Picture 1 (tube, one colour):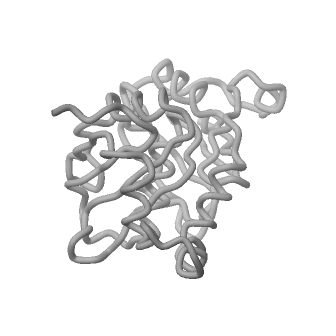
Picture 2 (cartoon, rainbow, N blue to C red; picture 1 turned 135 degrees about the horizontal axis):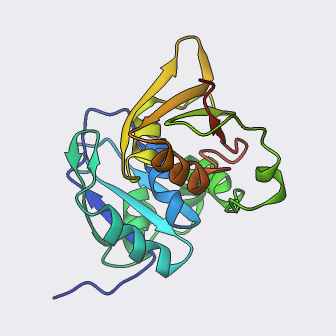
Length: 216
Protein backbone atom coordinates (compact mmCIF):
# COMPACT_ATOMS: atom_id res chain seq x y z
CA UNK A 1 0.00 0.00 0.00
CA UNK A 2 1.35 3.44 -0.93
CA UNK A 3 2.07 5.80 1.92
CA UNK A 4 0.08 9.03 1.73
CA UNK A 5 2.17 12.16 1.06
CA UNK A 6 2.81 14.23 4.17
CA UNK A 7 5.17 16.82 5.61
CA UNK A 8 7.63 14.28 7.00
CA UNK A 9 10.04 12.25 4.90
CA UNK A 10 11.90 9.17 6.09
CA UNK A 11 15.48 8.64 4.89
CA UNK A 12 17.52 5.47 5.23
CA UNK A 13 20.61 3.78 3.79
CA UNK A 14 22.76 6.63 5.13
CA UNK A 15 26.37 6.33 6.22
CA UNK A 16 26.15 5.38 9.90
CA UNK A 17 29.77 6.37 10.60
CA UNK A 18 28.93 10.09 10.43
CA UNK A 19 28.67 12.02 13.71
CA UNK A 20 25.03 12.72 14.59
CA UNK A 21 25.37 16.51 14.83
CA UNK A 22 27.31 16.71 11.56
CA UNK A 23 24.68 14.48 9.94
CA UNK A 24 21.87 16.80 11.06
CA UNK A 25 23.71 19.90 9.84
CA UNK A 26 24.43 18.27 6.47
CA UNK A 27 20.81 17.14 6.09
CA UNK A 28 19.67 20.66 6.90
CA UNK A 29 22.05 22.19 4.35
CA UNK A 30 20.93 19.73 1.69
CA UNK A 31 17.16 19.73 2.28
CA UNK A 32 16.56 23.38 3.22
CA UNK A 33 16.88 24.38 -0.45
CA UNK A 34 13.39 22.88 -0.94
CA UNK A 35 11.61 24.80 1.82
CA UNK A 36 11.44 25.61 5.51
CA UNK A 37 12.42 22.71 7.77
CA UNK A 38 10.57 22.41 11.06
CA UNK A 39 12.65 19.60 12.54
CA UNK A 40 15.25 16.94 11.81
CA UNK A 41 15.35 13.78 13.91
CA UNK A 42 18.37 11.48 13.73
CA UNK A 43 19.45 8.95 16.34
CA UNK A 44 22.53 6.80 16.78
CA UNK A 45 20.82 3.87 18.50
CA UNK A 46 21.47 0.46 16.92
CA UNK A 47 17.88 0.28 15.65
CA UNK A 48 17.85 3.78 14.08
CA UNK A 49 21.41 3.92 12.75
CA UNK A 50 21.68 5.29 9.21
CA UNK A 51 18.14 6.70 9.30
CA UNK A 52 16.56 10.11 9.82
CA UNK A 53 13.31 12.04 9.55
CA UNK A 54 13.04 15.51 8.03
CA UNK A 55 9.88 17.51 8.77
CA UNK A 56 8.96 20.30 6.33
CA UNK A 57 6.50 23.10 6.98
CA UNK A 58 4.97 22.73 3.50
CA UNK A 59 3.80 19.52 1.84
CA UNK A 60 5.08 20.70 -1.55
CA UNK A 61 8.58 21.00 -0.09
CA UNK A 62 8.66 17.43 1.21
CA UNK A 63 7.34 16.13 -2.12
CA UNK A 64 9.91 18.07 -4.11
CA UNK A 65 12.76 16.97 -1.85
CA UNK A 66 11.73 13.32 -2.12
CA UNK A 67 11.69 13.46 -5.93
CA UNK A 68 14.87 15.50 -6.39
CA UNK A 69 17.10 13.73 -3.87
CA UNK A 70 16.02 10.11 -4.30
CA UNK A 71 19.26 8.14 -4.67
CA UNK A 72 21.43 11.21 -4.01
CA UNK A 73 24.98 10.14 -3.01
CA UNK A 74 25.07 11.35 0.60
CA UNK A 75 28.44 10.61 2.24
CA UNK A 76 29.08 8.10 -0.58
CA UNK A 77 25.83 6.15 -0.09
CA UNK A 78 22.65 6.62 -2.20
CA UNK A 79 19.84 7.89 0.01
CA UNK A 80 16.52 6.05 0.03
CA UNK A 81 13.66 8.44 0.71
CA UNK A 82 9.95 7.88 1.29
CA UNK A 83 7.11 9.63 3.09
CA UNK A 84 6.90 8.79 6.79
CA UNK A 85 3.85 6.68 7.67
CA UNK A 86 2.36 9.57 9.64
CA UNK A 87 3.44 13.09 10.39
CA UNK A 88 3.40 13.07 14.15
CA UNK A 89 3.28 9.52 15.47
CA UNK A 90 6.62 8.47 14.01
CA UNK A 91 8.37 11.58 15.34
CA UNK A 92 6.80 11.12 18.76
CA UNK A 93 7.97 7.51 18.90
CA UNK A 94 11.47 8.51 17.81
CA UNK A 95 11.67 10.98 20.71
CA UNK A 96 10.14 8.52 23.15
CA UNK A 97 7.25 10.85 23.92
CA UNK A 98 4.41 8.98 22.19
CA UNK A 99 1.52 8.49 24.62
CA UNK A 100 3.31 10.39 27.38
CA UNK A 101 2.32 14.02 27.60
CA UNK A 102 3.71 15.11 30.97
CA UNK A 103 7.20 15.96 32.26
CA UNK A 104 8.92 13.33 30.14
CA UNK A 105 7.67 15.06 27.01
CA UNK A 106 9.11 18.39 28.15
CA UNK A 107 12.52 16.82 28.80
CA UNK A 108 12.67 15.04 25.46
CA UNK A 109 11.69 18.15 23.55
CA UNK A 110 14.80 20.05 24.55
CA UNK A 111 17.08 18.12 22.18
CA UNK A 112 15.74 19.22 18.79
CA UNK A 113 14.71 22.69 19.97
CA UNK A 114 17.96 24.31 18.88
CA UNK A 115 17.59 23.03 15.33
CA UNK A 116 13.87 23.84 15.31
CA UNK A 117 14.42 27.44 16.31
CA UNK A 118 17.28 27.66 13.82
CA UNK A 119 15.04 26.31 11.08
CA UNK A 120 12.24 28.76 11.82
CA UNK A 121 14.43 31.83 11.48
CA UNK A 122 15.94 31.65 8.00
CA UNK A 123 13.60 32.97 5.37
CA UNK A 124 14.55 32.07 1.79
CA UNK A 125 16.73 34.81 0.38
CA UNK A 126 15.83 35.83 -3.14
CA UNK A 127 18.77 35.89 -5.54
CA UNK A 128 17.42 39.23 -6.76
CA UNK A 129 17.23 41.00 -3.40
CA UNK A 130 18.84 44.41 -3.03
CA UNK A 131 21.52 43.06 -0.67
CA UNK A 132 22.59 40.41 -3.17
CA UNK A 133 22.94 42.93 -5.96
CA UNK A 134 25.33 44.94 -3.80
CA UNK A 135 27.89 42.13 -3.50
CA UNK A 136 31.00 43.48 -5.27
CA UNK A 137 32.12 41.10 -7.98
CA UNK A 138 35.01 40.22 -10.26
CA UNK A 139 34.86 39.43 -14.00
CA UNK A 140 33.16 36.05 -14.69
CA UNK A 141 35.27 32.92 -14.57
CA UNK A 142 34.85 29.23 -13.77
CA UNK A 143 35.85 29.46 -10.08
CA UNK A 144 33.51 30.87 -7.44
CA UNK A 145 34.65 32.45 -4.18
CA UNK A 146 32.40 31.81 -1.16
CA UNK A 147 32.50 33.92 1.99
CA UNK A 148 30.51 34.45 5.19
CA UNK A 149 30.36 30.69 5.75
CA UNK A 150 29.48 29.37 9.24
CA UNK A 151 32.14 27.73 11.40
CA UNK A 152 30.69 24.22 10.99
CA UNK A 153 30.95 24.31 7.18
CA UNK A 154 32.74 21.30 5.71
CA UNK A 155 33.67 20.11 2.24
CA UNK A 156 30.87 17.53 2.10
CA UNK A 157 28.23 20.13 2.99
CA UNK A 158 29.32 22.49 0.21
CA UNK A 159 29.76 19.66 -2.30
CA UNK A 160 26.16 18.57 -1.68
CA UNK A 161 24.91 22.11 -2.31
CA UNK A 162 26.86 22.68 -5.54
CA UNK A 163 26.77 19.11 -6.85
CA UNK A 164 23.21 19.65 -8.09
CA UNK A 165 24.46 22.07 -10.75
CA UNK A 166 25.87 20.88 -14.11
CA UNK A 167 29.61 21.24 -14.56
CA UNK A 168 30.50 21.06 -10.85
CA UNK A 169 34.10 19.88 -10.36
CA UNK A 170 35.27 20.39 -6.80
CA UNK A 171 35.17 22.37 -3.55
CA UNK A 172 38.40 23.72 -2.04
CA UNK A 173 38.49 24.85 1.58
CA UNK A 174 41.14 27.25 2.85
CA UNK A 175 43.18 25.79 5.76
CA UNK A 176 42.78 27.83 8.93
CA UNK A 177 39.90 29.90 7.53
CA UNK A 178 36.48 28.36 8.10
CA UNK A 179 34.46 31.22 6.55
CA UNK A 180 35.74 31.08 2.94
CA UNK A 181 36.00 28.46 0.19
CA UNK A 182 36.39 28.06 -3.58
CA UNK A 183 34.15 26.06 -5.91
CA UNK A 184 35.35 25.09 -9.38
CA UNK A 185 33.12 24.45 -12.42
CA UNK A 186 33.86 23.34 -15.98
CA UNK A 187 33.08 26.77 -17.39
CA UNK A 188 32.18 30.31 -16.38
CA UNK A 189 28.58 30.07 -17.65
CA UNK A 190 27.97 26.97 -15.51
CA UNK A 191 29.58 28.68 -12.52
CA UNK A 192 27.28 31.67 -13.08
CA UNK A 193 24.13 29.53 -12.89
CA UNK A 194 25.16 28.11 -9.49
CA UNK A 195 26.23 31.57 -8.28
CA UNK A 196 22.84 33.11 -9.06
CA UNK A 197 20.88 30.18 -7.61
CA UNK A 198 22.73 29.97 -4.29
CA UNK A 199 23.52 33.64 -3.68
CA UNK A 200 22.45 34.41 -0.12
CA UNK A 201 21.72 30.75 0.72
CA UNK A 202 21.63 30.28 4.50
CA UNK A 203 23.50 27.22 5.73
CA UNK A 204 22.59 28.39 9.23
CA UNK A 205 20.17 31.06 10.48
CA UNK A 206 22.84 33.72 10.88
CA UNK A 207 25.10 33.18 7.86
CA UNK A 208 23.88 34.13 4.40
CA UNK A 209 26.51 32.85 1.98
CA UNK A 210 28.11 35.48 -0.29
CA UNK A 211 29.26 34.27 -3.71
CA UNK A 212 31.49 36.13 -6.15
CA UNK A 213 33.71 35.10 -9.02
CA UNK A 214 37.24 34.38 -7.82
CA UNK A 215 40.02 36.76 -8.84
CA UNK A 216 41.98 35.50 -11.81
